[in-house]
Image 1 (cartoon, rainbow, N blue to C red):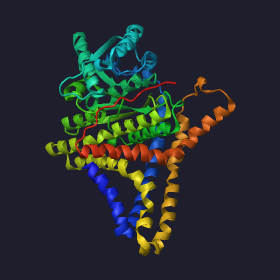
Image 2: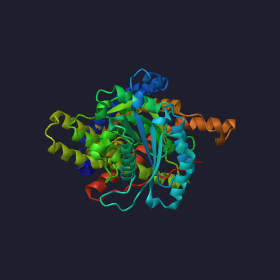
Image 3: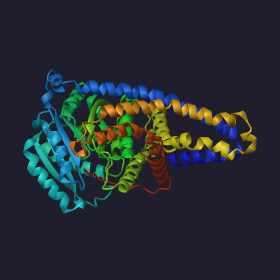
Image 4: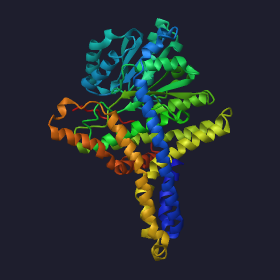
Length: 485
């Protein structure tokens, strides 16, 4: 259904530009105006979320926690699925956990390896275990077997297996599941020092802590200075989208590195048979509790890697594959539709609201950039002489150009906030005055690449995923290569 709708939209614009160019021209103007208003609306949310994040970073969350009785009863189960990442990447993540302000005596850390990754991965795990296992309450290295029936190779199946192994230990320790928060982190995820204190505070003060997931804001600062400009734009755009969603918690869905109660992780059963496990666990929980489940925005960052490979061409390929994998979240639409049809306790309004938000989101992902940047000229090209002599044909390029110029306010806001989010410039990046200034300028002017990235790394991979779903060709999980320079 999503793929059919997206392709029908694009094909319809082509055909109607020839048959009914006036109608298409009016549609394009209205569509551009809609996106101008949407950009302004989302920019306000982006600014509000950024300010709240900066405010939260200044708060001493451990001090706030100390005022809550029994806060030290809360344990954190941190699970880090890895594949074939180098020791340097894994070590940096574990060091960030050690640097956390939360008591390490309340942290159970699991390094979740894959049998299919081979012996080198196990050697890395042994090195990390030898270096860090005494720094936490408990430290486990798990090895996810390959070829388990019913599983899909990927992060979700490894994460589910690792938590199952950790639960055996937790049961022996007799720690109540209600007192354990699971954080499923990508192996490059580095939480800020007070992340776990912030998470614990939100868990203990949530309206319904056991029916909530907890979402940080991913910022891709680990290697942002080394990544090429287009990769930086895509990564930072992902950060901004999560910021906007945090300011709209009624639309927020769990994404990538996030946290949730162990009790719900076990009761609902974390998905091990699909690619988009991070969002599916939210929808499974939402349906299981008849709509009484939500994601709590933390307005607090975790730092991750932007896409970076050994050379530019490989970075381009990897970036496309990563975006296609994320766009495969479209598989949640038929799941959600079927779940809504079966569940009679969720109100019709809530069903329609959620379905419209997710459907419109994936449709826009696949079509909006193409409609805005490429198809606005179609009525002029295909409309024929009868349309080209009209006043509308003369004004169409001017109107769309003016609307899109005004919409650049979103690009301006993004450019400013992205500059404010930058970590200190690495010393090994060249210390000359000229190279330093050029690199700083590139961090601002990179946003002129936005139209290109929205089309080639937004619309195209989204259409790719939706077409695969429409044709019944499942997308297998692809692990993003992680390189540090």
